Length: 224
Ligand SMILES: Nc1ncnc2c1ncn2[C@@H]1O[C@H](COP(=O)(O)OP(=O)(O)OP(=O)(O)O)[C@@H](O)[C@H]1O
Ligand SMILES: Nc1ccn([C@@H]2O[C@H](COP(=O)(O)O)[C@@H](O)[C@H]2O)c(=O)n1
Image (cartoon, rainbow, N blue to C red; front, top):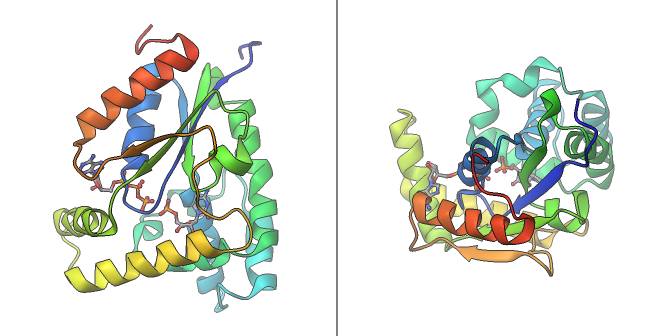
């Protein structure tokens, strides 16, 4: 394990803005570990549903969050990628006890990236504002809701999952509203975040702009 303080990159943004794609590319390029924090909320939401509970029930959601740990098998389940899991995630995410329970998990990852990686990239909704307010580089990746819904629709079609365009758009609007209007840790850019509107940018253009920004903040170059 390295003794130096890890470089932390925070990437936030709404659903299907491309933050997960960008976070993985940044992690690969700089040799950093990547944590998709949405997976944690999805796991809590799915655990509550499986126990026959309501994701909006504070006590049930908090119990599931406190039972989650880094080796929990639910974190690797494909079932987390469904829209049902996303909607449940955004309901448990509004419960303050759930956010408190998951905070420690995320901060540990940032402070001690797995396998002694020299840095960590965390993507989510509140990484730059709450989880890692001292991150050296903060990116807020966004795009219009119509563009994001179209990206998600294409992704579902690629995966062979039947989906109706208007339903995907409505679900995304509902999730955006819950995520940005909740009382605790609402989705918003940190004051010192670099905001990247990707509506008219492809993934390579977004990656190049993010690399430039991280380079300017850290002096690091990919692969160095
Ligand atoms: N700049 C881009 N242009 C077009 N498509 C993109 C771009 N970035 C990512 N995508 C595609 O959009 C879809 C959503 O991307 P991704 O999963 O990275 O978003 P996300 O913000 O992490 O979503 P979620 O919060 O729902 O997990 C994927 O199919 C991805 O390949
Ligand atoms: N830091 C985070 C990450 C996620 N959430 C909530 O989880 C939902 C699912 O997230 P995805 O990134 O996998 O789409 C999301 O809609 C948020 O409600 C969060 O609150 N904070």
